[in-house]
Image 1 (cartoon, rainbow, N blue to C red):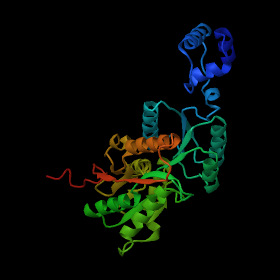
Image 2 (tube, rainbow, N blue to C red):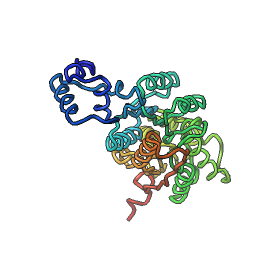
Image 3 (cartoon, helix red, strand yellow):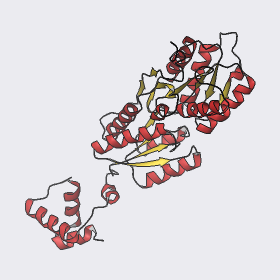
Length: 335
């Protein structure tokens, strides 16, 4: 493969002149431009993005670190990130951490070596010293959705607490008398705030008990296992708020296997608004986040940080809304 030195030799100019032409960061006269362009065509030279970026540590590359490639929520986020990045002339490296801190730490190390311009974290394993180290190395970052309580940084998320209150109130409105909650990891803002929202909404009822909550780990199999445990402890549960849609789908599947009718015997509400909630039967009522909009905004903010347009750290919380579907529409077949 041809190198920049090969181009400079064939064009009869210095390596620095070729570099100025490629990076458009200095004057090159028209005659010299033609010589360099001819040499590039002749040699079929392909500039190395990393090599071009060494001087200014800019490669027009972003990274998105997310915890679970099997969760459709992150697929929609990733699509938005990539769409916006391409619009601004950036490429995106997708990194699935599998919720493992060691894997995430290795990603951070490798991404630094590759001179990525900025990193989006949709993860809860990021440590305070990681944030500080990235800032010291002038690598901008934005926390997306799952931001933990770490050092000051820009966060894009939604109103999880309000959404949880909305979910429980809807279940009460459709006549539920005993509502359980399948919760996500409590080390995440999403899992913790949705849990708190549930607890705030039901703790004053005489039927409430701490045994009405069960972990589901934001996974489909977690939702299935949680439903089985909850129904064994409380066979009279008639409403379930699942902390994300993936767990809600698992819960629906298990309830149906147990012969429990949804929504007639148990009404079910999820959280996120992923498309898969419309594929199952009955379709699942969900508290919808503007997933694509969150991905778009977080990417724009990161690029603005990279390009020096914004310096201050910000927090952006999107509103959520309820989408009522068959899993809670108890009277939909009534005459």
